[in-house]
Image 1 (tube, one colour):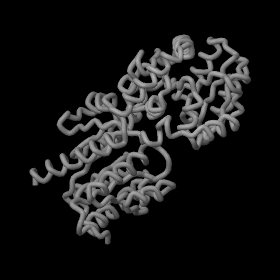
Image 2 (cartoon, one colour; image 1 turned 30 degrees about the vertical axis):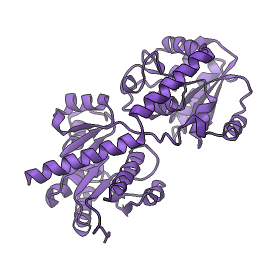
Image 3 (cartoon, rainbow, N blue to C red; image 1 turned 60 degrees about the horizontal axis):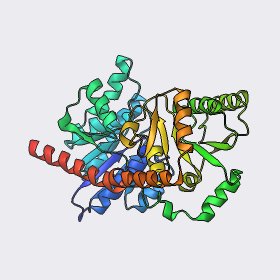
Image 4 (cartoon, rainbow, N blue to C red; image 1 turned 90 degrees about the horizontal axis):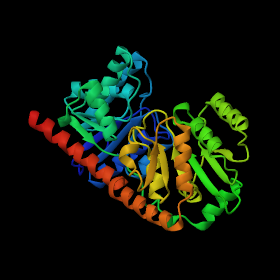
Length: 387
């Protein structure tokens, strides 16, 4: 049993796994906030690379088959979660994904403890069955949305009232994403790995290789830009989407851009990568729920160009920290790239100052942790009053 005699509260977060992604990052940061407040932080999942970091912040991890969508496994997970609630005197559950949320909802209701959920995206909701499956993320005593864009979606599609809603932006570590903390050696090593000649302007598009991320829109924009004296780095893993990666490579060849565009794959040192860039692009054809890349790039003082929809409208100050263009329009993206690449050194310095200040005011991990704890306390206070 977890020794929680000196802990004021015990929260159990449930999610499918502890591998990479914003969902996992949020769970670790929330656990750190709980431990910092003197609470006991517990997480249940199928495990993954993030377990080690989770345990380093002082949280406890339990291996449960929570990624499964098999109804029998989900039903058995209810019993497993109820056992954890009883054994560790858990005060509240926090569900971060739909399949584990169904088990968590049943376990919480049967055990008489509150449930809070985090809505991480819009999810596919065209069919009645899909909307029913998604709706579990709105049935908690409190609902966290990671942007106002997501909050609006929850309100419009699922009818969630504002009194249960908590808008909490994802936060980034501004100690990690800080231009002053990135050594010249790190930047030089990365430039050598990517065969970047100096001096040359660099356009960067980080993110997994997926159709909706808009890599093809950027390639078409570069064809319209017509410059050979630049390099474009499309950074990211294909995550098994080998066919799509081949499509990108073929399109690059057809547009005669093989000497301009490079696909280096996954990058382990994104702060150094941002330092190599002159402009960072997000060309998503579907709205971003938050868009961590755009926030990281601004934290590094880099101009950003993003599709004008979703949470980009909340994370970017158009004309001050970056620019937005009509989603899916390569001509508008090319115009925005021309403008950003033509900035003078003075204009770049002013933009960098604005961008860094913007992120440190609104999108830090400290802000996210503090607001999450506020949401936890609000839900616990409300449910205690009801009881």
